[in-house]
Structure formats: C-alpha cells, structure tokens
Image (cartoon, rainbow, N blue to C red; front, side, top):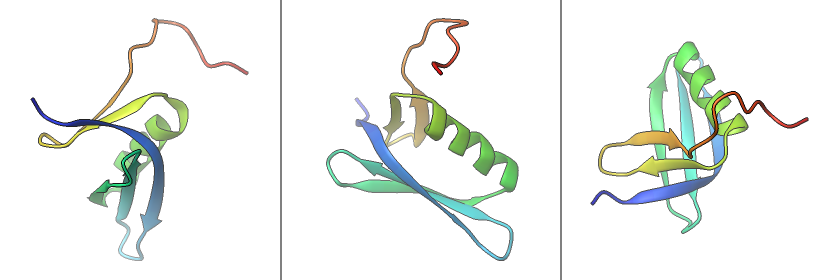
Length: 77
C-alpha cells in the first residue's frame, strides 16, 4: 500500500521564468514538492492547500487529495 501522509504546511516559490514550485511539508518533518508548475496549476493547488483540510499526499503515485466532505457544505465564516 502506498504511503499516505497528511500535509501540515506548504510554501510556494515563483521563478522569473514564469514557473512555480510548491513544497509540501508533512507531520513527520519530511517533505516533497511539485516543480515546473504553470500559473493556473499553481493557483489550483494553492487553493486546495489553503481552503481544504485535511489534505493528503500519496507518495508513490504523487497524488494530492482532500479528506471527505459533505456536498454543498460551504466554508465557515
């Protein structure tokens, strides 16, 4: 079974060539990253990381995914 880790923090780097990198930090103090991202994909991933909880990373397949949420729940204000 692939290792699944909960993301506890992230950081975003944007380069002069127009690409971005997102660092994903896990509770066990390890990390992974997405590199060479175009602006649209960067915005999508940052939106997920900023607004959803929990967010997980599956290492072997490099999949970012959210926890289960009810449909139409909306965000608390």
